[in-house]
Length: 284
Image (cartoon, rainbow, N blue to C red; front, side, top):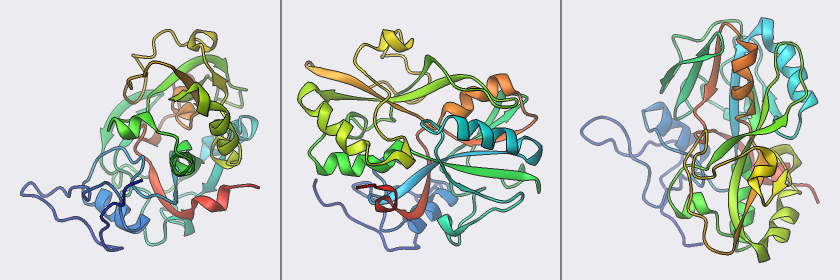
């Protein structure tokens, strides 16, 4: 990989006339704190590749009355919902985002009311309630650095778009009010590299691990790869095979049936970047 310019840790890229900062040239921040500061100041963009070596996580925050049901839902479905951390009711920071704020440090948030998407916004400070419990869920962006280091191209990074994500026909195991379909992310790979990608990603079980499906998307209920439910479509070169990993957007699909009074999540592909090193979640 080519080297990329960095910005000093703890600083925000210079804001243009409109007051919103720009991502650094080349796309990499010097530290997770620098990235979070930029998002807090108004930068909105997908986070894949932004902070190589540091773990990115999905966010789902619900009122405490629903927290046990969701924790049980995640425990029964660890592939799409590996829990990296849980914040206490009302807590807005933790050791995973030292000095950060869960209400402002994600590029973009989705607000659900009674299971329906009600708003998309860049911060949720005024919406946050003292009884909100935030779950930080492993993300497949974490193992992308390892794939790139092995010479495996990541289509959505090279094409400059968000990762494509799809609802499948694979059901999750219900728990309490939560149920729904498995959501997957897709990366097209040359047939010759699929086995190596499986080997590499299987070493990251805390961030979805090995793929859940390889090949024909119809077998898991995906009729059109050009029309993802979340993220962006990617071009699939000749000779490439679609490879599907469980995705931490699965809880957002479950909200449609659970219909909690309030839920706050990240915008798909726009993750919270934590201070935890990717290597922390790699197994031998």
